[in-house]
Picture 1 (cartoon, protein in one colour):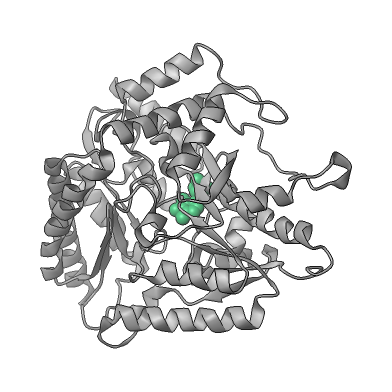
Picture 2: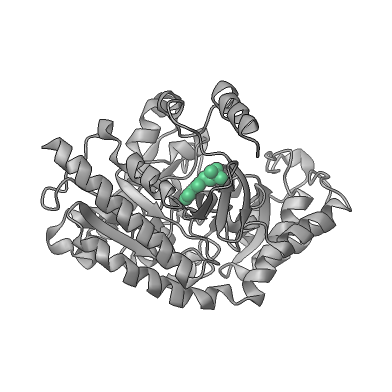
Length: 462
Ligand SMILES: *Cc1c(COP(=O)(O)O)cnc(C)c1O
C-alpha cells in the first residue's frame, strides 16, 4: 500500500473507530497496527510487515488465514444465497451443521440453537435454563430457580446477561447495579493460595464449598455455568484434573442445570475437540462460538439436551415458545464455512496432530521458568498464560502505569509476532494448524520480549 494511503488509514482509524477493550487515549498515542491480509499462520499489515498470529486473531482461527477450502466454501455458498431467516423457516447449511454438531459434541446434546457470538450463546443458555424450570413446574418453581452460580474470575461474555454471570472485577464491577444476582463459587485458581500449590487439595476444597452452596441454595439455582478446564479471560487459569467432573456430579445431585461455556476451549483448543471430553462430562447446555467458523464469520451455537427442548413444546397459545432470536441466526455463509471447518478438522486429523504441538509448546515454555520476572507459566493444550511479576517470591505484579505487558507485546511485534496480554499475563494462543517451527518461533520471540522488557522495567522500578 502507498505510504499516503497508509497515513490516511491511520488517521481515520483514530478519527472514527472506537476499539473494544481498548483505552482509546493511549491507543491514539501509538501507531495503529492495521492488518491488510493473512496467509496461513501469518498476518500482514498495510506496510507489508509480516507477523506470526500468536493469538489466533483473538482465539478464533483454526486452519490458518486465507485457507483455500474455507474460501471456496464461502464462495460456493455466496453463489447460492448469503442469508435467509431461520424464524419459522429453514436453510440448507444450518440443517447440515446442526446434525454435524450433535454428532461431534458430548453425548446427550440433541438440539442446536444458533446465534452470532459467544455472549449470545451464553445469554440463550441462561434464558433457556430459567424458562425450563418455569415450564417444567410453574407452581413448584414459582419464585425459585431464578439465580445462577458461576466461578470466581469467570468470563462468559459482554452482554448484560453474560456479564451477570461474570466474576472479573476489572471488567464487571462498574455494571453491578444493572446485573441479576449471581452466587460465586470458589474457582480452582485459589490452589495457588494454598500450601505447596496442592492442586488436588484445592480441588477438594472448591468442590466442598460448592457442595455446601448447592445444598443450601439449590432451590434458588436454575443453573451453573463454567468454562471447562481453563478460565480463559481470567488469565489462562487451568483447573485441577477432576474438577469439572466433580462439578458435573454436584449439579446432577442437586438438580441444577450445567452450562458448559466452551466458547474459548471448544474446537480443539485444549487438545480434544471439546474440553468436556477430557473428563467424560455431558453438560446440559454447551455453548460454542470462537472456533466454530475457524475464524471466518461470527456464528455461535447453544446445544441442549432433549429434555430441555421438550419442555418448550406446546400449542402456540400455551406460550411455551422460546421467544428469542437474533436476526442473522443460522446465517448460510457462516454455517457453510463452519461445516467446512469441521470437515477439515476431521480429514486432516487435526486433533491427533495436536499431541506433538502441545508437547513442543510445553518444552519451549520450560525456559520461561528461569526468567526472574516470570511467575506462573500455565498451559492446557494450545492455551498458554505466562504471568509477569516483579519478583518471584512476593508474586507482586508491575505497577499498571508502567504498561510492562503492553511493552512486551510491542517488542514481540517488532520481532514479528502478534500476541496480547490479559492483565499481567502474556497469552499465547497459537493457530492450531501452526507447524512445530512456527510454534518455536512464537515462543522464542515471546521469550526475548519478556526477558528484555521486564529487565528494563525492573531496573527502572528500583
Ligand atoms: C470470548 C468468550 C465469550 C464471549 O464470546 P464473544 O463472541 O466475544 O461474545 C464467552 N465465553 C468465553 C469463555 C469466552 O472466552
